Length: 442
Image (cartoon, rainbow, N blue to C red):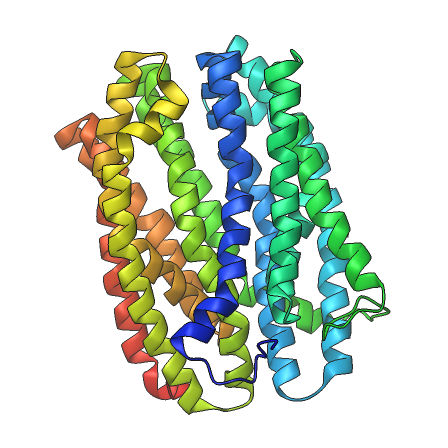
C-alpha cells in the first residue's frame, strides 16, 4: 500500500517513506566519490588534488537546485495540505522551469569565471589546467545537475520516493560504468571522469522530466503555469538555508584547502578530499532523511495537525541521535580501509588521511540532528531560522575553528574544526526548537 502524506507515521512507516530519499542522496554523493577513486588511482595525485580544489566551486552552483527543490516542495506540500491540487501543480511546474532557465544562465557565467576562480584558490601550472578542464565539462551539464536536485525533493512530495530512488540509482550506476570505461579502460583521464559525471546527471534530470510531463499516477504533473513571483521568492526564501548551507560548506572547503596547502601542501588537499568524499556519503544519509521527512512535516503543518507534527519531531530527534552515534563509530572503525581505496599507493599520504579521518569522525555525532533541525524549519516555512542554523553550522563556527585551531594544534586543528563547529551548532538547533515550540505547536 502506498504511503500518503496524510497518513499517521509510525517509526516503521517514517523510515520506509524516507529510505528511498536516503539511498537517493547516497547515490548522488557517489558521483564525486567515484570520480575521485578513478582519478586518484588511474590518473594521479595532482589531478586528484585539482579535482578536490575546484569541486567546492562547482557544488555552490548546483546547490541552487537544492534551494528551489526544498523550498518549492515545502510550498507545494502546504498547498496540497490545503486541498488545492491544481494550484500545487502550477507551482511545481514553475519551480522546474525556473531551475532549468536559471541553471543555464548561472552555468554560462560560472564557466567564464572558472580560470580566475581556480587561480584564486591557489592552483597553478598543471593543477590549474586540470581544474579548468574538469570544471568546464562539469559546468556544461550543471543545468541537469540542478534539475536533478530539484526532482529529488519533488519525487517525495509526489508520493513517489521509490521512483525517485530508481532514477537516482540509474544515474549513479551510469556514472560508475562510464568512469570505469572512460578513465579505467579508455585513456581519457580527468576529462573522462567529468564526462561520466555530466552524462549521469543528464540521466537524473531528463528521466523525471519525461515522467512528470506525461500523464502519471502521482499527485504532481508538469504543465502550463504562470509567473507567480511571490511564490517563487517564497520558495527561494524557504530553501535559502539549503543553498546557504551548500555555499557555506563550499566556501569553508576552500578555506580548509587553503590552510592545508599551507600546512601540508598537495598531500593535505588530497587527504582532505578523501575525508570529504566519505563524509559526503555519511552526510547524504542525514540529508536524505531530511528531504524525505520535510514534505510530511509541511503537509501536516499546512493541515494544522499539531499532534502529528509533534509526533514527527519526537521520532525524528530520536532517529537522528541514534544515527549520529552509529555513523561516528563506523567512520572511526572504517577510516583505514576506506582511505586505502583512494590513496593506498602513497604510505605517507595514507597515514595523514587515516589520522585526520579518525578525528573528523566525532563530528558525525551531531551532523544528522543539525541537518534535520534546519530542514524542519524549512518545511514549516521559516527560512530565517533554518538559514541561521545552516549559516552558523557551515560557515561561522567552521571558519572560526579552521582559522584558530591550527594555530594551536597545527594540522590536527584543521580536522578538529568541524567537530567543534557541529557541536556548537547542535546547541543552537536545540535552542531554536525550544524557542519556537509554541509558535508551531509541536
